[in-house]
Length: 156
Length: 152
Image 1 (cartoon, rainbow over the protein chains, first blue to last red):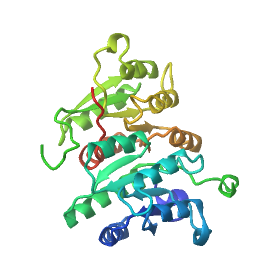
Image 2: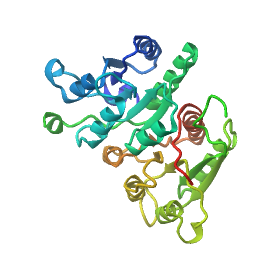
Image 3: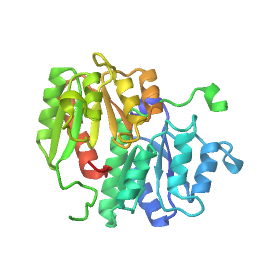
Image 4: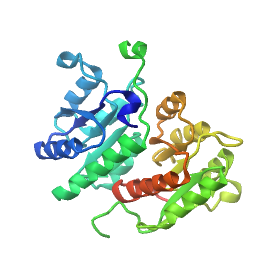
């Protein structure tokens, strides 16, 4: 997908509690060829509020793609993923797991919950940026993201 | 095993479901230049794809694929049905399914994501672009992404 396709920036929801990782992800995305707009939620409860447009997020844009950490305060990433993929309105949004966990159990369990892909964050900063760039390039330029919801669905 | 604990010691097993011989040949070519060892299995229609995945008939000894590249417009059983069969099967639903199709129809995109396709990739018209695309898919899914493993 390119910005020409949708005529607006790609809306990304990053669910991440580590400020260093947020900063690096922002940096990598700033250099993207594709215009994008990043919203950050620092824990799982906040992520769900953004997605359901509750409280202060009443006017939040519906994300085109979600980058989701697994180990999060309050509500963990596995629960957030399960809620998204069980929600008829949200389930088509691609969820990219971006985590330090390399546990086979996390990998299998999140794919079983219909995570769209699972990426382990490298500890090395340069490697981290390289991985985020490969991820955004794949999802923003190679893939067709699902079309935005129609107005009727969106108001539902 | 190194840092990449998720990378199987055996080659990554890829199932390509594609009825167009030219696309099959180009995909084989693109995967042959392997930075990561892989084995590509090809079936030409949706019925065969399901038999391969369920290890039925001639496929009783088939390996479990680590990833599926699925065309949508297929003879016998179409790609949507194959996708639905995979994503509703407890033994198969973890397998990433990449839709690789000439269709750009919004309805196909929406419907396949609803059925929990892992991603939707439109095929480019020009052959050179197709090879470049498949190489990038190979790089991203075999070198960046961690693939799930469920016993044999």
